[in-house]
Structure formats: C-alpha cells, structure tokens
Length: 76
Image (cartoon, rainbow, N blue to C red; front, side, top):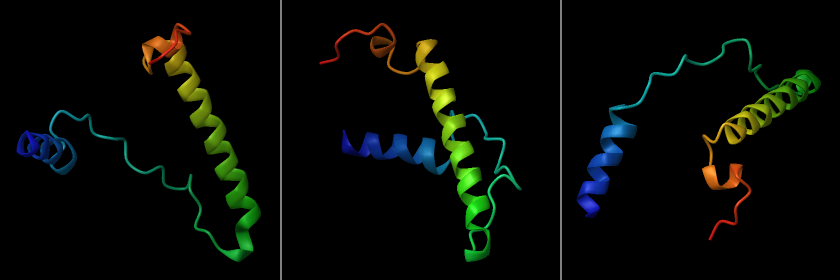
C-alpha cells in the first residue's frame, strides 16, 4: 500500500501525470522584495489575497470545494 501511494505521488507530483499544465508564473505580478519597495509588495500581496479568497468563495459556491460545506451540512 505504501509503495502504491509512493508511485501515485511520484506520477502526479514528480512527472505531472494527469495534471493540467499551469499557465506559468505571472511575471510582473509578483515584485521582488526589497526594503525600498515594501509598500508595493504589501499592496500586491493584499490584492492576491483578495483574489484568492474570491476564487475560493466562487469554487465553494459552485460545489467544487467540499460539496458538504457548500450545502452548509455538518462535516464529521
């Protein structure tokens, strides 16, 4: 069982089997962090947090994340 789990992880995470390719890093969307640009970094990070929460809320509403949570059922 452990070996099968290892092989599955190696295939998915190590080789990308069954995983849709990502669009890549959003160059320019994530500034380098330096003491001179901390306000800009904080602004971008805040925007990314908001975008991530909006995306998660949409997926939850559509039932893609924890269908039981989307129906407000108690999860055991």
